[in-house]
Length: 238
Image 1 (spheres, rainbow, N blue to C red):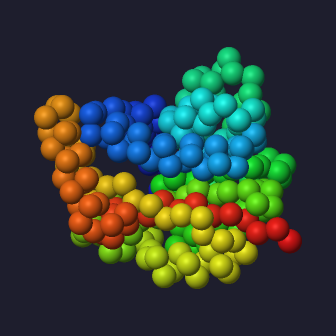
Image 2: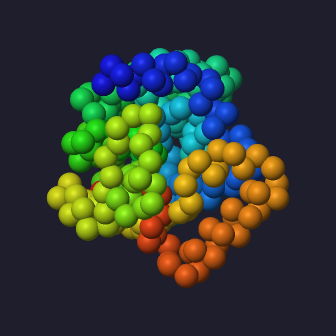
């Protein structure tokens, strides 16, 4: 946990630069559309983002008309400070708090309509336990949107800066059922290696990546071989 926390503390505000070039912005747009659509479908008023980073997801949710109360947690104080600065004048934000969801409970009262945990749960081998902690503050029939690396993606051949757990559709289905939820949707938004996205700063290369991704999706369907599996689940009523 300390190595993971140190990595994000050092990255700090620089994390936002990872979503700044043409190709990454296009991928981000697709991801955010998935999240916002889930918020709109249930008319989410109270939302929580786990792993706030520089506020990319929170900014999209803040622009969603039903949303009236937002909160965020992160393992890195540098990320929390970044979001506190970014959203300082928006009174709908009820607070940001340090939290390692792999070992700690959410430090906000329950009753959230929507919780997001994008590229967060994968850093714990026991990620289903983290899922349970998040679900404990989600209202019945609320939605939790999270992502996990796809074990069947070509990206499994590259090692990241930090160890991450990979999964499959079958594992996801079993876990979602075990934690008392139903799967609303599973989606994927990119298949090509992350390295290509990092260097696609020019519009022509970004357009080529987009065209390639569209061709792969048409041929392979929405999730086969995608890098990350984006999952929307609904908490069943007791």
